[in-house]
Image (cartoon, rainbow over all chains, first blue to last red; front, side):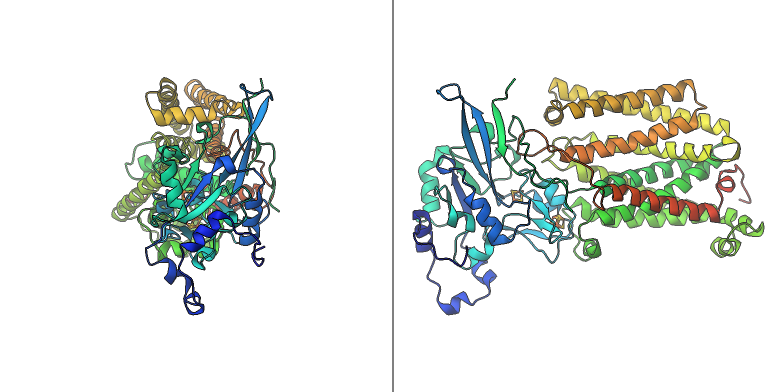
Length: 246
Length: 365
Ligand code: SF4
Ligand code: SF4
């Protein structure tokens, strides 16, 4: 999937590419962190829930891009059947794409006993796989169930905003594939960027998950129903992708 | 009734702190709990406590030596445990814990050695099993009160730090309301002490003749007190949660209240505590039974908190359901630590048989 040039570039993708200086072959060959660590960018995502069609293209793209082992997910579109009272049909569907929020105050960082989890200068919360001891303290501390222990690597794993792609001037895989154009990725520090413009335009409607936790997520939502903002009250899913790990 | 919201697609996160972690928190708790029971006889020289205090010390030692292995096994990268020492991270209580455990264990081993030296020498003199090794370990077999007190002080510092960090580390996890209550460290401590008393009672019962009845009664009183405190703490927890006086307790309660499993666990815990209390008060001679009950409660409490706590999704609806896998990440973790515990117990009691440890005698001084 990543090798294939998409035929049509979405609006959000085009806008993103405009905001990034054209990389010459020489610049592209620079070590990636050197590009990211200049402190200019602050990456974030806006999810327009109203546009999500629940197709899980992002879920699949992420698994492909990041070799996420079977049964684990760095991103998923939580899907709910919701009783309707004001419509003819008895129930509607609510979709909520979830991923690591790359929190500004991430509770997963201070708990790590070996300093393996850290925040890059560009806002991306990352795990140093060479250092992680797999203690899973960060998994416990994340209020969003965004982390898990990867059974293939035995280390903490989660969404990286596709840092390897972003460092190379590309969009995260989930944004790239989003069919409904619901995921907008960009630089909070770029006033002309699509992300900033959309956030500013939608100001009052912009919400984050579990704001009371004080984590200051950098994944924002438009159209977030407050019944889904925290732990959802309802009947849990019966689907468990991996009952026992062999 | 059909719920208004039914989750149709979501990820079910697996348990990340495995049964190994339950074993660690159980064993390290038993260890410091039992170590406290060693104090009246060995440090404060309270009449009638010496035998039972030495048995408690054995319990502290066996559990204390097994616990770190369980902790190591809970890491998904156990070979990297040295990272804890190479990359100290002061913001993390787990990082501090990596330094507290060696303090406690160094103190404990030293203290146990000093306390058991004379008995080891006698064991060697009388030609007991592994007499040669016992003689080497006894290293003259002198009793040194001053050294013992110094070792006790070091162990105390270590034990206090371990008790503190094991409680606070879990309590700080705000993302899990059930863990995030200031009473949690207290509950860990009380059940650990009860478990330590319980294990000493079980050892006492294993002595030829079923142990000293006076000591059993004394221990029963102590155990009754811990159960009373455990019940009181439970009541405070519930009142804080139900009245809404404390938002963190209310949240913790709200999180588990709808679950039938949790109701069963809660009733179970209360009944076990009340039965232990009643038996300890009315039949203080039933040392083995109340000992086992206290051990069971200490384990159940940790299992429920850790495994049950991780069954509560942080964002998703309902509960995840955990089934104990049979492999190394499940049942083997429990069986493995139990096996190691038994092995250490056998080795130590071969060097120093239980009845020699439990004999209420004092030499020299
Ligand atoms: S969402 Fe969770 S894993 Fe991601 S930065 Fe926030 S606390 Fe850390
Ligand atoms: S699992 Fe890894 S990243 Fe997470 S807290 Fe432990 S060492 Fe840190």
